[in-house]
Image (cartoon, rainbow, N blue to C red):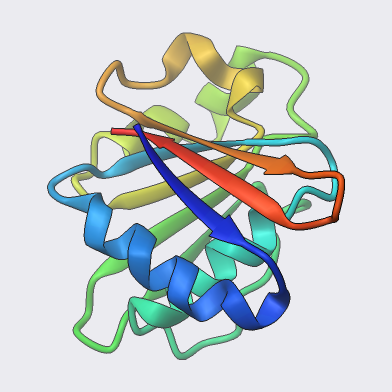
Length: 139
């Protein structure tokens, strides 16, 4: 288990860089945390550091966004908050994305636990009393 601490927004870039150094060959990352914990903000920082130049937005309504990095790698960013059941995840082809070999960052993965690959990496963002964030990565 690895832990990254974010004291202020100015720490985001370094935290994203630390996270990227930990990725290794892993492709599926399940981001857990309460509403407002910073899942989307952290994923945006990671995508930026990986070389995504397009606008990175929360896929709250589209459910999945696709980004391309400068070196033509694909990143899929999911927000499963609005999904009511696993059938809705199957309807958008979530399982196909997960087995595409591309990076997948999934917010609210607890909504689709039944179809997530076993080799996923759990990333939990905790908001501490001082409003800083502690990110736990179970690699």
